[in-house]
Length: 271
Image (cartoon, rainbow, N blue to C red):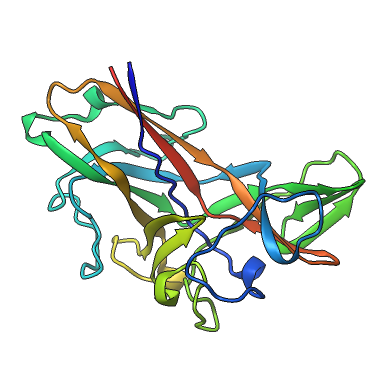
């Protein structure tokens, strides 16, 4: 078996709370937390729980959502649908089932070629919980949002809270430090820890939007090198997401624990 690491990390950053005091910069590097209170910066911890609803995953020969379009074009970009949710109870859970066989989503001999992009569509709702231990104290997420921090020494589980994307530029229409040229209200070309991708808000009809009408989030990333597939190809994709939270501190207190970018790694195994 031949393993090919696609090595693309896809992410979505929702909250500006944890980095609102940091000097704006299109490229950002966020380090892991070290067991101390961050000093006017953010650091990363692993989430206790991280829940997302994935609606569909596609691989495409061309970019399915270039900047001049207002809705994704799966057909024109010659995309192969890896998986799509059908029905209320059918969900894509990458924690339980992260492998997708090529033989399951190759429809005919028209698919031969090189695939350059991976696209994913999510519901606009992210639910997380987590905690950060400093000495004997544990800083835990509350149910009211990123700034609701519970401090104790017990083993009680942290509470869950949910967030949605409303506007990449925030309520005050300020540049998003993770987005190229600050982003637009609906679209962000992200660069986080050296990883680049595009994330776009969609309404119920899958047209680009922002604000309260944002029901879905679409994003796409380009593979470091194209993946060649034909009707005789055998193998599978293994897609795993990494569930991180961002901890922000002012050097004295932990001020917020927020949803970090949604990341995943894709591996392509050839039989």
